[in-house]
Length: 239
Ligand code: APR
Image (tube, rainbow, N blue to C red):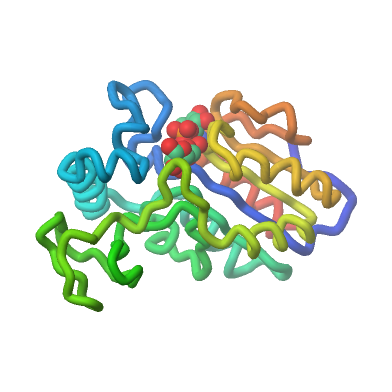
């Protein structure tokens, strides 16, 4: 099924979820064997969980950050980077992922709406910093020198995702919206397809399975991101 639309595509918004990194070996959240299997996200990914058991939260995020060194970007990350480099119009990449595989796959612009594993935030002075090694309650903030306040710079359930104004503006003016590897369970990201449709964009979902919002998309590309994203990028660059 090709992307034959007739309409000129000049502005593309790409939303990625954990599925785009699955073939790099990073577990998704809700697939079999996923990060949330056997874990209640409310025990890990909330400010209340961090207050209740900071050691558990530090262990979870330090382990995920350390795992980044063991994995590599895959063909989907590289295809998206090629689209950003070669597409004659605009491409805006927004990801729910907190890994660094889009950057390491060559993407020049990545909007991390849920934050990044490679960064920490100081709960005392709010300064952000790179997380180059494991940290915990004894770690000191490089900015204010206080310990006990460092937390993963990751957006938890109940917190406001980053860059929502920029994302909303991009969705309001895009001609094509592509969601890659997301279950459509978590808002506000799951609602982006409706915003893009309201703006008149063609909407395409890339996922080997049905998502919670599959019915909102004009087109579905049923298959793994490494195959389907590469095909889609070829079509877009060829067109
Ligand atoms: N290619 C494309 N999609 C894939 C692949 C693949 N190889 N493998 C799995 N998928 C799809 C699954 O079918 C599923 O729809 O990726 C999706 C992963 O869904 P989730 O695990 O729910 O991940 P995501 O949608 O990114 O979760 C959203 O939930 O817990 C929060 O903050 C967390 O950002 C995360 C948010």
